Every structure is written in structure tokens, then in C-alpha cells.
Image (cartoon, rainbow, N blue to C red; front, top):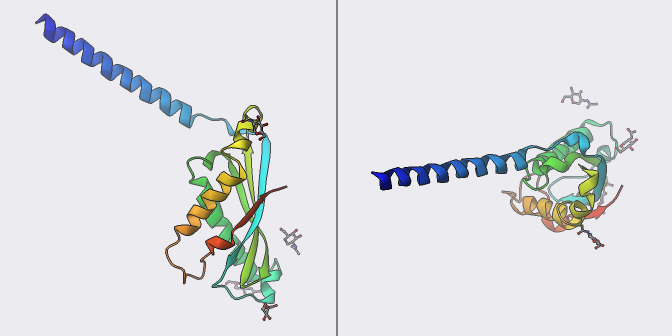
Length: 163
Ligand SMILES: *[C@@H]1O[C@H](CO)[C@@H](O)[C@H](O)[C@H]1NC(C)=O
Ligand SMILES: *[C@@H]1O[C@H](CO)[C@@H](O)[C@H](O)[C@H]1NC(C)=O
Ligand SMILES: *[C@@H]1O[C@H](CO)[C@@H](O)[C@H](O)[C@H]1NC(C)=O
Ligand SMILES: *[C@@H]1O[C@H](CO)[C@@H](O)[C@H](O)[C@H]1NC(C)=O
């Protein structure tokens, strides 16, 4: 009887501590306050879309073709960084800035923000050019079809830290 009671207590203690650990872990992951993210980090670069045909229209911001393509690409880049478990919370915006001839080359800008007190380690690791670049490149290697009009050539991806 005593042994069974002790066993039950031990099991109860184990489950309680597991539950507490899970709750604490979840809190650390979920609670962050974006209003404290005051430091901005930008990246700029370009990529090539070999299945798009370049026309003069693409160099005019106000044209339908340029706006449609820019909106679609901007959404694609935003989705890819928003859903990244490492980078999602720091991501603000992806912007397509221009199109150039070569089938079509798109110039983009990415904006991230981070808390002042964590800026040094974040800049060295999570928000380093290598990390932000690799998340993008992995996404490009995962594209399903090379014949899709929206296909982006992974080998063409360029990125630098910039403002
Ligand atoms: C784009 O570049 C190609 C190859 O250099 C050229 O043949 C074509 O005329 C250019 N297109 C435009 C719209 O400038
Ligand atoms: C832009 O596209 C919309 C809808 O596709 C169309 O109604 C409009 O006439 C187009 N405008 C130009 C300048 O081509
Ligand atoms: C075109 O877009 C660029 C980059 O966003 C901007 O600097 C420029 O003012 C825009 N030009 C026009 C005519 O809207
Ligand atoms: C970040 O990198 C710089 C230069 O490589 C180094 O001096 C600094 O100590 C690093 N900081 C952290 C927090 O890793």
C-alpha cells in the first residue's frame, strides 16, 4: 500500500514538472514585445527570373505589369521570412525596388528589426547576412518547377548588408 502510494506521488511529481517545463518553454518562445525592437537591419540584393520576358513596361513603376510582378514577389519574400522560425519575429518588410533586363533581374530590399540589448549577438548570428541569405537560398532550392513563370534562379541570388 505504502509502495503504491509512493509510486503515485513520484509519477504525479514527474508529470507536474514536465507540464511546468513545457509551459515555461512555451512562454520563452512566444512572449516578445515588438515595440522594443528599435534597431533596424536592412539587406539588399537581386535575383534573376529566367522565365520572365523583360519589357520597357517593367522599368515603369506605375505600369500594371511592374506593379503586379512586384506585389507578387514582395508577398513571396514576406511569406518566406514571416514563416521562418528563426527570423519571423524580426522581419518587417520585403520590397521589390526595380526590374532590370537580363531575362528579368529584380532588385529587392529586406527590413528587419531587433531589440537594442540583443543587437550584437543577433547581428553576428541570427540576423547575419549568412543566415538571412541561407534562408532565402533554401527556399529557392525548394521551388517545385523550373519552368514556372515565377521561378527564381537560386544561383543568381545576391545579398549584401545595406541601408
Ligand atoms: C534586353 O536584353 C536583351 C539582350 O541583351 C536585348 O536583346 C533586349 O533588346 C533587351 N530588352 C529591352 C526591352 O531592352
Ligand atoms: C491594369 O489592369 C487592370 C485589371 O487587370 C485593367 O483594368 C487596367 O485597364 C490596366 N491598366 C493599364 C494601364 O493597362
Ligand atoms: C519607383 O520606385 C522607386 C523605388 O521604390 C522609387 O524610388 C521611385 O520614386 C519610384 N518612381 C516613381 C515614378 O514612382
Ligand atoms: C560579434 O562579432 C564581432 C566581430 O566579429 C565581435 O567583435 C563581437 O564580440 C561579436 N559579438 C558577439 C556578442 O558575439
